Image 1 (tube, rainbow, N blue to C red):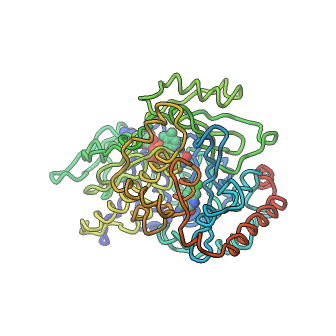
Image 2 (cartoon, helix red, strand yellow):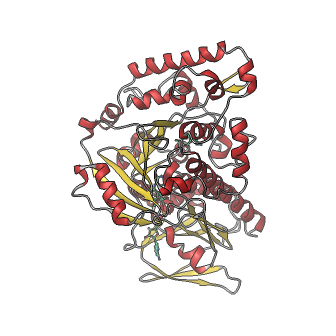
Length: 521
Ligand SMILES: Cc1cc2nc3c(=O)[nH]c(=O)nc-3n(C[C@H](O)[C@H](O)[C@H](O)COP(=O)(O)OP(=O)(O)OC[C@H]3O[C@@H](n4cnc5c(N)ncnc54)[C@H](O)[C@@H]3O)c2cc1C
Ligand SMILES: N[C@@H](Cc1c[nH]c2cc(Cl)ccc12)C(=O)O
């Protein structure tokens, strides 16, 4: 250990979590810490074609990586929204977009929409992005400029803030789709180039000292490896935190029953078919199917609850959904551990990634959890005295993010109008996390705002809750009485402005495919 504190870091696991952590810590502390990353050559990583939050741009900025550098290497595309298909009824869709919701006279535009919006679709009337998604547009022009003046101002946003500090200040207009396994490979080169020692070997044992702290790990071929701080990035196995240090795992299964997935990577002729600029989540009999457009292929998979559907049935449903293009592609069946570790940091071990916690990928939060954990680890990096208060603050921040996202996902199922199978009927009566029942009652009286959603930072702003409640259609909502009593001229003008801007952008912007064909040429 150095004079400042722990400076020998050992990371176990070479998936997205392991390499994101190694590269970020190197960017933060350079050669003032030494990092060894051990990954098994035999135990595979999870990588299915992932979607992200927009905040991940801060990760790339921190590493000084530009889109032109990393995106082509990861088959990445832009994500303007999540499209929820068939959650209300077959044939219905709505978007949860990356776009700040406008307010008029102190009320969100959605409140005015409930009182008398111009059309049937709240997403198209209140957000420009819904029309861009329907039309398959890129958020950038072919020369790389962002879609409009307002969004350009967002790129001048203050730098050097963590994600939680950015929340509510600006809303960047897009996130990404990419192959997480390729990102891990790309970041491995970045990290090794900056001095990270990379060992391919299996950790067979974790030896503790008399206080129960990790003393060293034992590998199959490289013997003992010692460090001050150990980072567990071993995925659902939780080799260090859950197994060796016996930190219990708290399941979220009572409120979020989906525990299984079957995934396919399907090569497609994107030139012919185009590339959708959004993630699609299509409701199914016992769960939902994700469709993530990558460059040259789609990542797709059925997330389901095995209490309601067998793996064979799930694979059959997925293959029928995708069509003949998937015939020669092998399916990957995955059991998901849904919930979080009781503490993600115990003694000298911090878990990052699936070993820390995971919820089903409905709102693409896995990589957001990793990014958030790494930012918090830097913020609360231990000193020589290993002050337990630092650890406690880290554990609270990480737990809040996951518990908050758990609530947000539970809202999706509780509010979905669909009730055609036992799975969807049970979704209406399944218990929800503490305090959400009361929040739902409040939202029936007044749309969600920052005062009445989950009270700690968890990545989701109030407008995200509004989108889900308005789109899912199963919970009665009403506009504020004050909106009904007010002159709505300004609101109607705003609706018109959105429609006009959407039309202009649909006409002016290139297709999503054309943008990436140009970027790669
Ligand atoms: C079905 C599904 C869909 C998902 N979709 C999304 C999405 O759309 N968006 C998103 O943000 N996230 C998504 N995720 C989550 C995302 O894929 C993961 O968070 C991410 O890939 C990080 O995984 P990881 O690195 O924690 O674990 P893994 O990828 O499982 O890596 C574990 C690593 O630990 C190593 N290891 C394990 N045991 C040992 C040992 N004894 N010795 C040495 N090494 C060991 C393995 O070799 C491997 O390198 C999804 C996850 C699943 C399951
Ligand atoms: N901080 C997140 C929150 C967010 C705001 N809008 C959306 C939309 C979707 Cl689909 C996911 C997430 C979000 C972010 O900006 O990424």
